[in-house]
Length: 102
Ligand SMILES: [Zn+2]
Image (tube, rainbow, N blue to C red):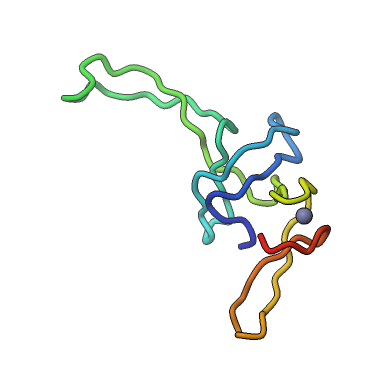
């Protein structure tokens, strides 16, 4: 998966199209990501010891990784990073626009 936790992404389709946010969590097996402030879902919480009231909370639900695009922190281009192997054999990602390591 090309998108990692901590990446900045922009949503390219659906209700949250155009919203930029940080990836809070990624699920490589499911090919989904949780993006900050995107795809809120209501969650019912039963009363607990810490929260006697319970109630309804809104939490971010995962969205398909194909619905987001990577935002380059160097040039702000909306472009998914490419991968390359450096001389010392480490794998790295770089921006196809400005070619900075991301
Ligand atoms: Zn760039």
